[in-house]
Length: 434
Image 1 (cartoon, rainbow, N blue to C red):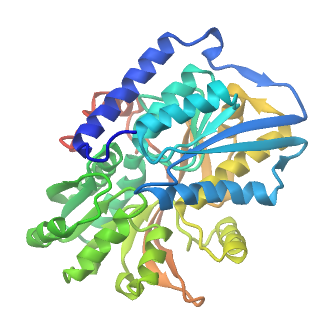
Image 2 (image 1 turned 120 degrees about the vertical axis):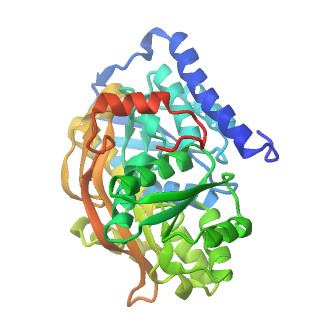
C-alpha cells in the first residue's frame, strides 16, 4: 500500500503516469481476446460482477454510499434480472491506485468476473479502465469523474453509467456564477489532483465565458481536512464568489466547518457535487451545524430535491427503506445496477462490448438523473443543477434546485476533436488553467 506520508503532488503525478503507462503497456501485451467483443448468447445463467470502491480511508463515506446504492437495487431484486443471477464480489481499494489495480487484477484473473464496476476516485478509475480494456472486460463507472475516461482515454468497454467528467459537471456552475449569481470576480480552491484540476478548469471556463474574472486559484492536497490556512487566504482575497471543489468524504464537512468557524460569508460560496453531497449535510447536521449551511449553493449532476418524478420516487423509496436521503454516490450505484438489470431482462446474459453498447443505446426522458442519454466516448449527457441547501418538512437537509441546465455534454458546445486534443495535451498539474 502506498504510504500516506507520500506528498499528494508526488502521488498525483505518479498516478497520472501510471494510468497512462498502464494503458499503453497492457494494451500492447493484451491477449487475443482483449479487443472489444460481442458475447450475447445465454438467456439464463450468472453475471459475475467485481465492485471496487474505497470503503476505508478518507473517502470511505463516499465509497460506502456508492456500494450501498448498488446493493440496495440488487437486494430489492433478490439478485435477479429476469432469469439471470447477478453475483457481486466487493473489494475495498482505499482510494489508492496500486490497490485499485491489484483488486481489479484479482477480480478479473482469479475470480473471473464478467464486468468491473468502479472504482470511485478519478485517478484510480483511469488506471482500472486501462487495465479492464486490455483484458476485454467492461468497466462501468457510477461516480468517477476523470475527463479522460470518455475523452482522450475513451474505449469501447468503458462507460459512465451515472456520472460526468469534472469539467462537464462544473462548467454550468461557472456560467451561473457570472450571470444569475452576479459575480464579477471569483477565487477557487480545488483538490490538487486530476479531478480537482478538471473541476476548476470547468468552473473557470464557464465563468470566463460569461465575462467573469478569476482573481486567484488555490490548491489543497487531496484528502485535506485542515482548511484553516486556505480559509484565511480566501477571505483576504475578497472576491465576489468562492468556488470550492473537493472529492467526497471528509474534506467537504472539514472545509465548511473551518469556513463558518472563521465567520466566512456563506452567501459567497459555490461548492462542487462532492463537497456538498448528502454525506456532508448529514455530518454537519449531526454535529449541530446544519443550520449554518442553509442556503449554501453547489453545482452537481445530481439533486435529491429535483422535481423529476423518477428522482422523487427513488428518493422516497430509498429514504423510507433506509432512513437515509440518497446523494450522488448512492444514486450512481443504484442507476448503474438498474441499467445492467434492464439490459439483462431484455437480452439475456450480455457481456463484453454488447453490455456497454446496450447501455449507451438507452434514452430516458425521466430517470433518477432527469433526461439522460449517452454520447460519443460512452459519456452520459444529462442535466446539471445549481443547488441550494434547504431543510424540508421531515427535518432533514436537502439540495434543492435553483437552476437546471439541460442536456449538458462533455464537449460543452465546442468541437469534439478540439476537446479531445485539449484533454490529451493538458498537463496533469494544477498549472492547467482551462
